[in-house]
Length: 149
Image (cartoon, rainbow, N blue to C red; front, side):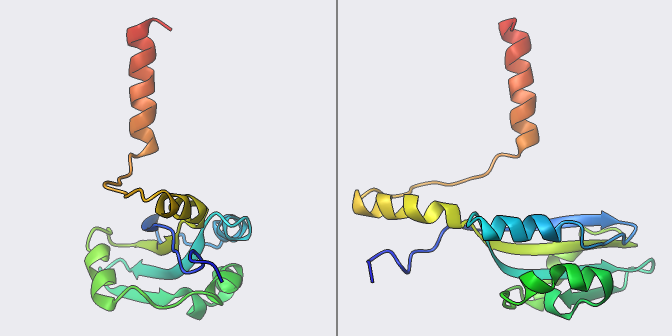
């Protein structure tokens, strides 16, 4: 057992909206592929449903039924319930009526070896953030226009 076996990568969450409550299992194969490739590890996956009257329904992926349930069954075997009901309700306030969302908590497994290297080098992470890809695309477009490329 090495010193780094218990190292964990950064953990992120995503909330993915499905307007009109058109939730399907179409994103499940990509999530499964990302896990199989060792890029991420799904920690929790919750489905939030808001009906036309604003009534909130919460379903853990392991409790999904039908076609969507079948698609997420493999992922759900390895998930735990990390999101509290209060967390879910707070995040769901931004959802419009007649909308569903997938709430995903995942570990960035790809970063574990890098984190181990930092520890071995006595380096310290002092800041971390995320820039949306749309922001980068806009900046690149602006730089190309400004630079004449």
